[in-house]
Image (cartoon, rainbow, N blue to C red):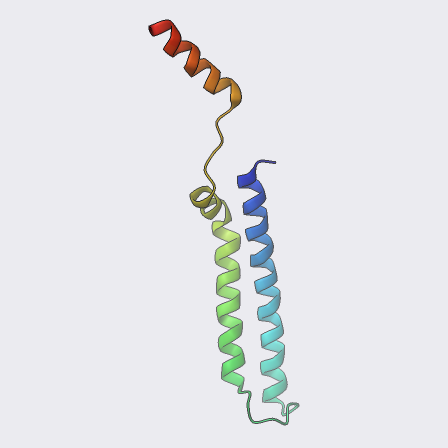
Length: 93
C-alpha cells in the first residue's frame, strides 16, 4: 500500500470511531432523558449536540478520506517514470 492509501485508511478508521462515539453520546442523552444521571451538569441537548457533531465529522471523514489523503500526501512517481524522463532529457541534449 502506498502512503496515501495508508493515510486514507487511517482517516476512515477515525471516521468510524467518531460515528461509534456518536452512538455513545446518543446513549448518554437517552440516559439523561430517562433520569438515570443524577447530576445536573449534563443536559440531553448537550449530548445530542455532541452526537450530531461526531456523526457529521465521522461521515465526512469516511466519505472524503481519499480526497483528504490526496490533498495532504503527495503522489509518488514510479521509479521507472523518473528514469524515462532523465533518458529523454539526455537524448535531447
